[in-house]
Image 1 (cartoon, rainbow, N blue to C red):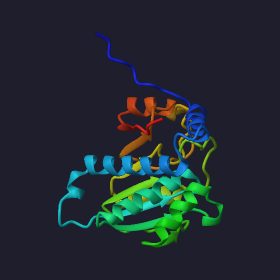
Image 2 (image 1 turned 120 degrees about the vertical axis):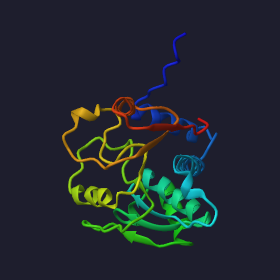
Image 3 (image 1 turned 90 degrees about the horizontal axis):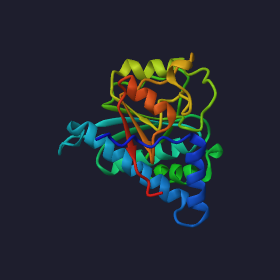
Image 4 (image 1 turned 180 degrees about the horizontal axis):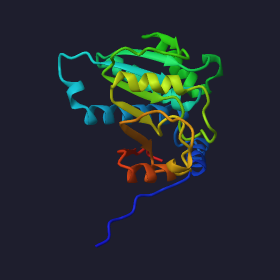
Length: 215
């Protein structure tokens, strides 16, 4: 019996599905973002169960970008903080440029934690986990100026969870066709269905988990 092949959709199809669900009133953007964040936290605790042991206070570095991918990162930060984690959150860009749902979750986080600007040459110390929520499926151009940030992530030697994609990857392109730097990753968590780049990442041994959003 042949195994069922996983569904693969493009980034444009994914955005259209989300827009349709929101437009018909079946779900709000904030609800989708909360579901995504909850799924990410569940994946973190399943992948690294040692970080969920009672009495521990793991340290997470959350890197948030200027779009809704960053909004997912704010949800993760808030949920981990409520679980007793120590969270250092860095934002690339200004809060005033965030989309409405991401800005709402930025403001929710600000009630319990601090937002640090992401420097060009950061030092993240020795965290137990890094969450890369800088850029997701909306990126289709080369990133410039992020080499030192990606190098700083690598220097920590901490596991890295990528939200949707390792930052810098094009969701619709083969990884081996890209000749610009991308963020390191240990685990990729995407939503609803695989995108074309995920199939190629899996083929190269990168674990990719799909979290349903109820679409």
